[in-house]
Amino acid sequence: MTHFFTPQASHETMLVQIPPNTIDDLFVHKSQTDQLLVVKGQFVLVTLINKKYQYLALSEDYPAVVTIPPGVLHGAINLSSEPCVLVNAVLRHRPTQERDYITRGRPFPYDLAAAEAALKQLQSTQKQPV
Image 1 (spheres, rainbow, N blue to C red):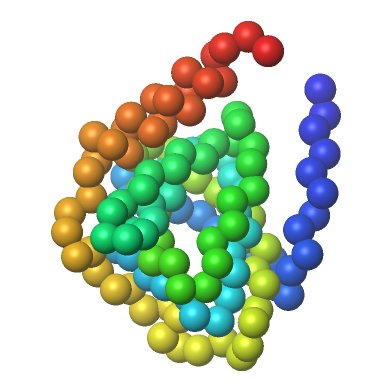
Image 2 (image 1 turned 45 degrees about the vertical axis):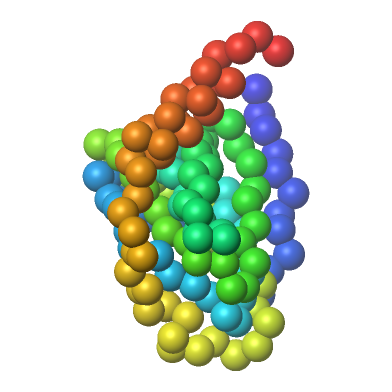
């Protein structure tokens, strides 16, 4: 069956590849909103909010657009042996600043077991009958 997705309004649309076995540091955009949709593979989006990591699994098998507003620290974890490809429909709020693309490191280590659990939870959701 063919699935259609409404294009997200954006100032710039990027195709992004997250290599296999990647654990990215955090970064934050002050000048843009990211709108992400996985088109191939899967990964875990990590955000740091109120000094706590949140792990959100995203997959081509369960398509969803996720919005990351300006000022939210975020990173990517791809525990798979396959690359993940996603579309980022970027909304610019002011001219791009170089510091928007500088990694910030991690104030404390990621919980990779929690990232794996988020992926397993997403996969179990996919297997439930509709």
